[in-house]
Image 1 (cartoon, protein in one colour):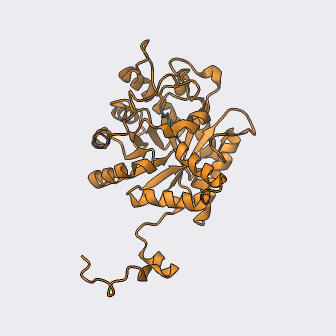
Image 2 (tube, rainbow, N blue to C red):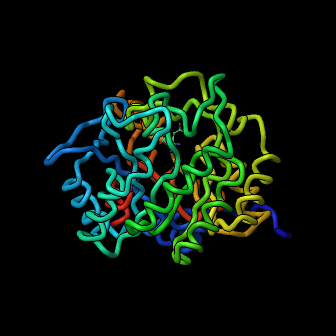
Image 3 (cartoon, rainbow, N blue to C red):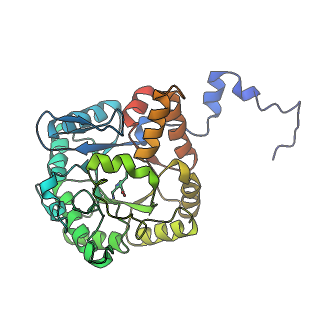
Length: 331
Ligand code: PBG
């Protein structure tokens, strides 16, 4: 409790000098807090800029290896991989997701070769592999089938683990999938592969540029509200997190980021586990658009938002600003 009052108490005193602000800072952002999402595409020496995600490109495997070396040099501990699957390999059943030689599995190997000290996180969901753009298998009425999808996701997680993934991140929001994947990893002798559950993942209007990046956006029939969470809900997020932890998740994620800081704080306070936030494509694109229009300072906006995630209780952030932020932070 503060017993003193003005003028004995002047809260500005500790703010006046930079050294003092540093000394009393409650939250510190470092490159160690960052996970860098990367988009993978086929070919050699390919860089495809993504129009709706300024400054972000899809890279062929050689470029992915170079980005991993860059992450290592910048002190970024982990990268997250997302494929732009060639159109002819997208099917109703998303079977390319379970091909041990698919883009993601080859990208894992390329990274482990180029930068063995960088952690590799892989997304488990079918949307980059299905012709309809949904995260799971769809029945003839358009319903995404939970249990049938879970079987494919489990297989997908196993091929990723076999290829060397360090963190399996199910982003599909099927019920029960964390437990199914955890059991499969144990049975297949991958006891130390982590699961970062996209536990509280909301059906959001902020995912648009990502869907362009993986080529699923134009295909998507309907929306994902039948499996991703309603943005009106917060208690439900706690139930999702509780279930994923009980099923064997090591860490949990809240997604999107900035509009959901209240969820991050509630999850952290309730469960005291490592919580991650995904600053998603639409959040990044809005800052980029504002900066390009002269409406704000990109570097300052990036660092302020990233620090806000940590202040809210996050252990780390998946962000397209990762290399920029690491450079600004002297990584
Ligand atoms: C796929 C997935 C999505 C994102 C991460 N994994 C999109 C979606 O659920 O439609 C979004 C990331 C971003 O917008 O940056 N299941």
